[in-house]
Length: 267
DNA sequence: AACAATCACAACCGCGTGGGG
DNA sequence: TCCCCACGCGGTTGTGATTGT
Image (cartoon, rainbow, N blue to C red):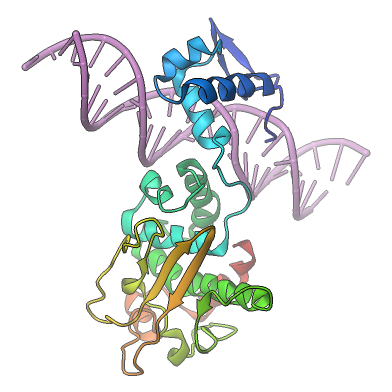
């Protein structure tokens, strides 16, 4: 949907307008908030001369007009962050959005519904099922990390290396028969930590009771996200994502691994 | 080229919460 | 304590764009 486009479906219910915002309305809202600030949305709507509800004004501002809104596709880093945080917090979109500067809860929610839930559907899984959570952790998240690494490698000539990993993170293809456990073990579900630049604190420290040293640290500096993948001892178990573990869950198969792989382009 | 199906995302809706009177 | 209001959150819907047939 293009912004600022007048729409024949626009509705005026009494004195309240609904539907897509016009450029004129956007300008009114921006000008008013620039002068008077946010808040008191119902009053703001009236005072600004907008025939909109306060709710509508607030939503338009927060999700679209606010200056620090970041537009464009989510980066692999951001996608990884969303997957990780959602696995922790569920549909707490606002809370998740707090850790993705410039991204709104609405945007994250839409991403989840259109991309992630689609994956679940195609795999005949419930998006909130443990099986799908495992699928995300064991297939998609490592692949995102791989993407991040590749992007980092591609840009390393012009900028400092942002991601540290001593070896290829995953085998090029990860069918169930070809899993390279030694390289795959570097990512484990229960041990990912995120850091914020503002506070330098661990945002969601998850104690990995079984694999305490298997960690990907994610932190932000300026406008860039950084990943710090710590090596883990060779003796660490790989049960989180091993074929044995998956078999225990009763959902993995060669076919499914292939199917997951074929869906890779959708991400 | 035309139509249908699907995607992406802006916008709306209902509900819960908290503060003030 | 109750009521009202503002606000914020999560779920859902609507619609233009894109892709497939």
